[in-house]
Amino acid sequence: MFKKFNLSESMSGQNPVKSSTVRGLRSKLVEQFPGISAHIDEILPKKVNLVQVKCKDHITLFTVDNEILFFQHFSDPIAPTLKLLHQYPDILPRVQVDRGAIKFVLSGANIMCPGLTSPGAQLPEEEIAEGKLVAVMAEGKENALATGITKMSTSDIKSINKGNGIELIQYLGDPLWKTHIN
Image 1 (cartoon, rainbow, N blue to C red):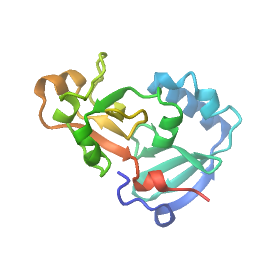
Image 2: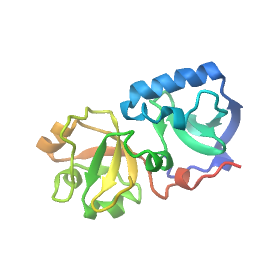
Image 3: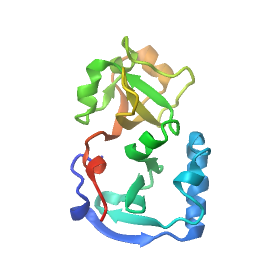
Image 4: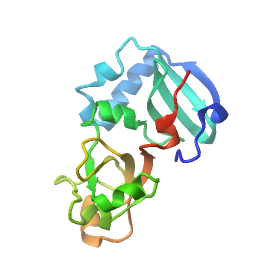
């Protein structure tokens, strides 16, 4: 999604978000990501100066103190950035890829099912449904290297073991990771 993203070229405007909208966003985030509920007051305090940055290609960034915390594409669910995920690693369910998949993930490739089921890879015990946002961890690393949306449920990934398992949204080193708002 962010392979060719450039904030200075794609930004079309930024607006402060009303406090009532921030309250709605907070409740939507807690509903969407149950793991964020313990940290929501730290991430988005009740009296926060949240700024909505509108960009081309229907991308919306949500920033606090010039740091991008969340983004949204069209009317897709709001997603946390990798930087926020590194600060609060338990807000998304995790999947782990094996060492062989790391270089491909860091270049923006989607994750194939064999990269999630081979030795060294790990899928969670609890079922993750198709279309859910997940943090992609790497074998032997402690921080997430990407976020993505599951293209099939974890049980299907294990049983079918072919095709695209996770479509990447953001990865380490992509243009959104490198973006700073001044």
